[in-house]
Length: 420
Image 1 (cartoon, rainbow, N blue to C red):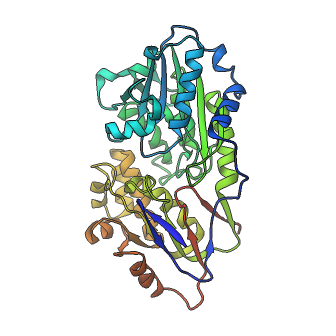
Image 2: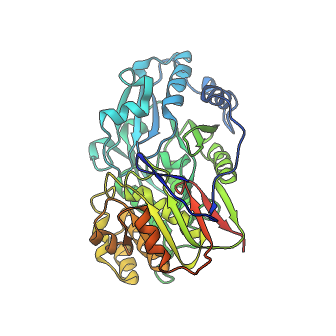
Image 3: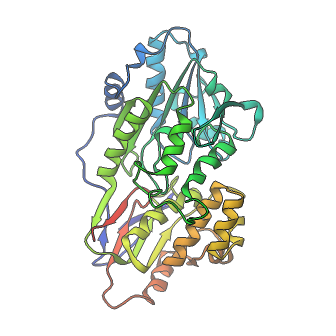
């Protein structure tokens, strides 16, 4: 059975293991057909032709290289539509929604823009540059909202991305293109801090979890902040593990996003009758395992297939390391209560991800195949294995003679759901 590891493919031979894959779907129409159909019939919104006027300045927000979205397909078609509305190339700009991620290289911008590269102006968002940010006020819950100036001052804003599971915001895509995508660092941190219960309760909110939007305080905070930006139109894709576009949804920021989320939920939730003793999980290869912050999504989803104390082997190449220079620093806190107290005192999204990582590593046995050292792996609560074969040998030592085993080739997208 082939499992992706970075840009390589490994072979896993586990007779009797159940392979958890997304639902089978008939071959979809071409990307151009899907995009054109969605643009022609937007959800809870007029079409672009009824929104955009000739000569207006239009900003298209799109995801960075860590989140493949099919942008090389839909960005040229969006620009084609805008040109037909009387908007010239020089009046269009693409802003890459980095959130708190690193800047993109020219080669990465080329991958994102496709045939538009060199034709349409492209800008990386910088969450720490005051000159690039505009203060839009405060949400009803007290979150300060500062947004990329180019986005805030555009005549029209189109937000694009892809809808898929997110381990505490419920789903990615939609409002996340704006917040945290093109927001100031403090706005990103404040919205994500909503993951916690009030101090007198402690711990994380029970609805701040994968696949939940209604009642999820992080989703509520993100959407409230994003609505302070005038978003005129949304385009979200839903992708197959091989990056093929399965669906395209256009229209109003929340309504179109929710429609995309429903397709993602239907396609990527895999039911299990009983929890497994061992799960072998590939993030899905590059870019889903480009760094650990991205890889931990597969970790979070994968452990949901396990019994308490079960074993997970995680294949995560992480050629870009941890994904942020402050992420690993948080593992100086090895006591989870002390860790949570430190996060409440000085919240960082990276710290939240680190805390979630260590918390799950304490509940399960985790064997990590990656480029990290043994010392780094141990600090994250995991065991290092040099390769998949070594990981399987380590795992066998703690298993019964007839263990229940699952293999998840696309762990960054598949959500196991134990029915009991």
